Length: 254
Image (cartoon, rainbow, N blue to C red):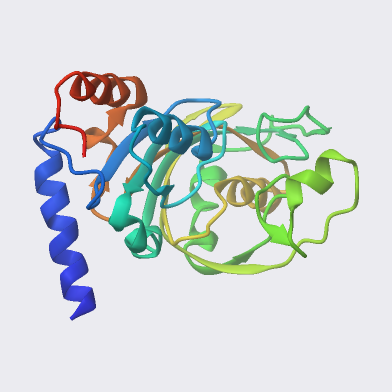
């Protein structure tokens, strides 16, 4: 019964969201689809929305972290709906992105400087296209050393930034779809559909290794989480401006 209620609740909020600026009820719970800006942390978005809702004192949380250098769909829950965050977070995710072949970085993306360079002159389009197949299905991957994974209560990136050796633990994830959509070396565009907890940076790093080469992530956008799509998302400024407008009308902010 709980599962059926959740699906009904999700559909209700999805249908309501198509009208965008409806009458919100943040206290009883709203599911907000946000297009996370580049360089913002997921908690930056949560904080911005929580502050815009003052003087209401509400729980506000997100259903699935996006790295600062990633953009795209971030699900924000308010009020009583924060109890459903684990349900939304468990949903399948879709991403599009760009990798750079022929180079690696310690963070597996552009946060850190290049540490190794590889020759890509002999890589063929067919090698790159066919390399995807081995990553489809249930796979194992190590999270990046520069990640928010906690080991003994401390996030890995905190140790990595201090130059300390980081203990990485294998995790099991599922890649449902992995396709190459553009090849203009050294750039390669891709689309991935995957399970909760998948690190696309690690997938890209492993992709380069499988080619006996190197690769790092240069762009990433989450385009879908479950049935929710980036096309239906608010810009942060758009939503905050609307909340400010609501505040000017007595009794509408609740």
